[in-house]
Image (cartoon, rainbow, N blue to C red; front, side):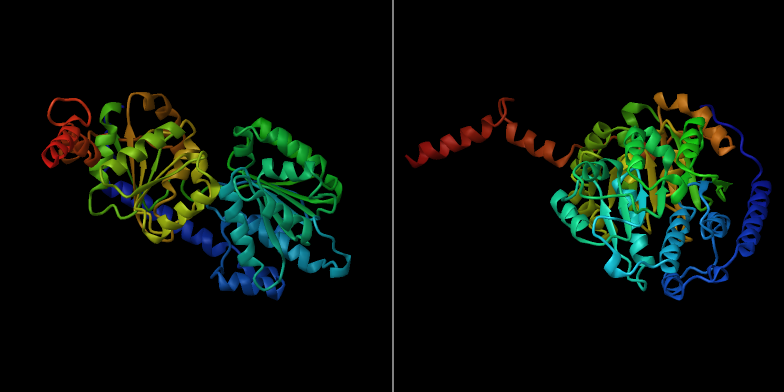
Length: 451
């Protein structure tokens, strides 16, 4: 991780300017949503959301999916793929309505499968916004939330769009609370993530319950396509169209990326000193493992940082509450794993911190994409220790750039004061070095003097 020479600022600035102009031209060449002559009820919802011009994935996907073609799409998170498949699903239902008296509970017309609860809930929120004027019923079934309430809903309601995670949906299929043999459209989002998380056996079981592939439309999206994903996609789809959308920038353009070379022993010190800077208004700290996030969040709180934990071990209702408090500003710093942070869309995150680098370069891009959103600028700070050096070559290749590492400035290397809790404990223990001894002596003296 030796420091590397930077290119002249003028040259780099000129290249960035040219790239920005090219991207603006590409955006202007994309079709508008009104060009697709969508049902007016759907178009009104799109207008309400302020969407006019399609993103790259939307402009490529919609002409195919609106015709009912199967689609395999490669696109990164944040490119607008969710809206692409939802718009197709809603338009399809509006063009082919089923009379209410012919509808049955427990039989969704559209199924969207996602690997994580957060992503599933984000898809459901987008679906609810897009069906605002069409009256379609969106139901979500995910693990970690009230099982009986979800079961009652899918058993008693006519479902238009069912958004689900594999495990919970498989439970309801096993208990015959939901049936997928009337499915018109199957959507598989982040197929590569499902593969990484070991969900493919569950997905295969779910697809066996679905309408045969020749009688349904299948749309599959993935950030990457290795041979395993391609093999699965060919099994699940019928003569699918393939589109590949390169992200406008693999590393968000509005995000300043800072890389510190710091020993593992000093990472927490540098992080906490940085978090106390005034410019850090709202931040997400990423770590690779649950135990790291747990220990780190406890350390932040002990040093007076308003923080909370977001990982897979936290109950879903608490995760939702934590995320809402973070959005409202009650929590200033969120400590999260990559899986838990999937589907998080919070505006005005000023900083993202990588306590360690993820093994997968795409996760790095996903992490730093939590800041610099909606036209705002942001900062990503990576604390690269000894163990992180192994993943740097892959990250540089993926980003197609050389990364420059610097030592943290002196103000970040100031030793931390003792946490408040530790200071209080030491005050209580003062006297003979045995815990609580001084307090007990004082109590005894009080008792003796009063006696």
